[in-house]
Image 1 (spheres, rainbow, N blue to C red):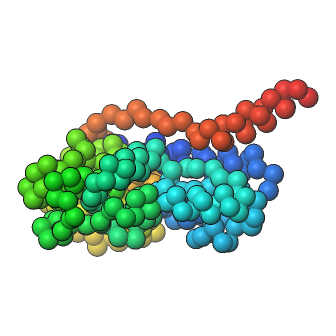
Image 2 (image 1 turned 30 degrees about the vertical axis):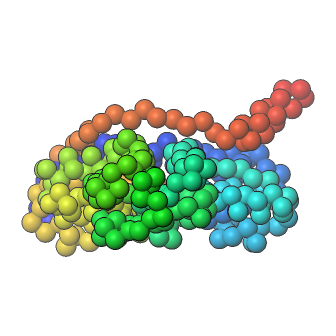
Image 3 (image 1 turned 120 degrees about the vertical axis):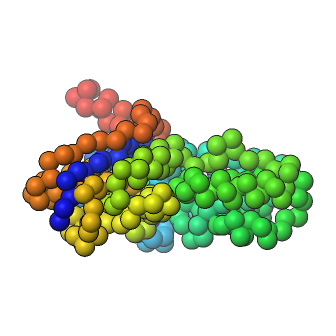
Length: 322
């Protein structure tokens, strides 16, 4: 191995929405008198899910697996109104960890549907976020995932089209798809900077900066993490060899062949300690030149769900009365 320099992307790893979602589960585990269920993975990272499971969270695929009246948390990716209705009918205590930026897209879908507009959702079929978003206006939304699909799309009213996007896509690919839609439907309503979330955009900008210096980029993140996969794609598009790995145990030194400089980043749902473990591996191999490459500063924080804040404050009040 001839690696001499490590470049760490900044920002990398947890975003405000992921921080919030994990805090929601941890706080619910402290406050709830009974088991805490989480519908789907709270975020798409195997280490985060396993850690929360070890602390007592019970992860389920559907509400049918949750006992009547129990506490259930909706993941950061959001859910459809139909899921909320089923939870209410079952008397479940719901704590909503949906990322506020995903909720913003839901509100856009609801508004456009109320206006009777055909809605085009740019996203990946089957992704939890896409399933939830489509559920807010199922009769109005058509899903596309590429410029090719944008070229052949047919809509009921071409003069009244609106477009929304999954929040974790590649900014460049999504912009190209929306450009096709704008050409085909000149009166289309599109978000000013798409609906790609700030964290996804920032991490992609940081990866592009890394690729200017590092011929190999390691992306820490799980296979089912959309934003992590997009980081690897962005790195490859920028000319680097990019590899996605859950943790240091999956690092293949053959990936590093011929590279004196290696870049490291992490998806928005990957904990920082996973990056630190990879860095320590390189340190054991004699790498001493380790630097951060900062593309942009992040100072974003999302408040906890009000239903959880009420429970926390109520418990604090009871303790103070004792």
